[in-house]
Image 1: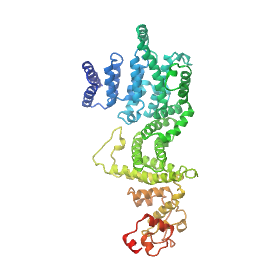
Image 2: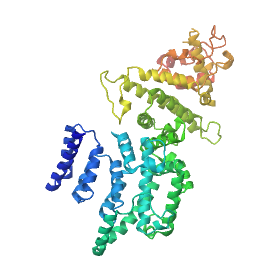
Image 3: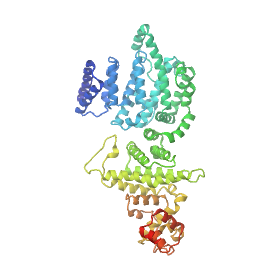
Image 4: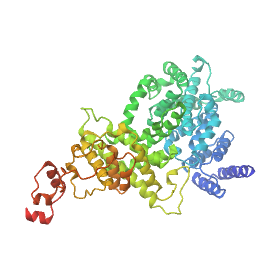
Length: 575
């Protein structure tokens, strides 16, 4: 502990020296980063953040220190969310004495509170959130039983917006109109600050007064931004769902601001719009729009929040993979799916969700198949679902997701055996035993057989599913089907209870990509029983140009085969 205090004190000494010399902020940040690396301090550092904020508030509240801090935030020396939490306990209560600091604090909010993805993926994320919980006592205030990092982020965003709201009410003399007549947050100056504030009031300039009024206006507009932003609006919706009693108090104060604020009349957001943003009807309608408009970065953040907050309400494990459902549905909105773009997006999202949910590849793959099967099943019986959407969903299941899985397996198996890349930001890079990822794919597909409702084949895929099941049955029965035309198969040719389903198609797609082998045919329950001989009614010749040359009839199956396969030079000569 003593050693820790020593290096923290050195941080202050380096900062003091740079401050006195008027050093360039980037040079200071580089020197500080080099020193911290030599001390083997993990970045972003909680201790450095606490030291810098304490140093600024208030003996060194000068422009150059704010520039230093900004550079430390940009270069990931200190965690932004922790800095915002630390400042909120110091600056908001002192906003009248320190209007410039209050404005800078809100500028930091604009810059860092809406860029949560990189912070959620960052080093020391769990420790940072636990520190924030301790500083703001969020768990005690909101009474949630879980201290998951995602829950704390929801509590933090909700508390920051609420603090801005109470500060704005207090600045306009409206806080007295609330039922509590005070804020649950520390928004009023300390006693000794009030004395200093009164003396300063006697001499304060017109510029100072304008800055205070501007700050109130800026705070109100910032509240509106939190409610309009794609990610933070969903986070506030999670607060509404999980902290209903607190949300009720929050909206009551928002109505009070909407009805009585003079500053709000000059804001870019109208009083009516501000109130509508907090209404349940707006949030529900916005959720519908977000399903098609959110980008993958936004959804990753929402997924991290939802997965943690759902734990305190006993939500199902599938909630953790909600962002995957949204991404898949979003890809179906166009007639032509961008395969490469979809593969890259889904691959990146799966990696992040796997890290956030701290899950195995088995559960990751199982969730991936379930999400895609749900996608394929949606709208299957509706006469209003365009055909291209059904085709896109079927293609996604058997092509795009199979390629995503292939990338994961290839990444694992192509990695050097002695290489280990593991940290809190990228747990998916942990190198496991070669072949483990492939084995967990097989185990996930075996378990997929338990989800009978999701495996019902679409009308357009019944024939293909039956063929896949028949192929497996022939194989385990030891019957050679190399020259058999499986496209001509019907259930009349096969024993009872051997109909195929969507899992048979997925397995065949994985075998075609060399992700599985034919041992999958022997999985328990994959096929029902064996057959003793090849059904005599099955045609033995595979349709194609050679079959046509030998006198086979021009059946629909034959036509499809000819269209899909170019004729050889010999066939062209014979024709």
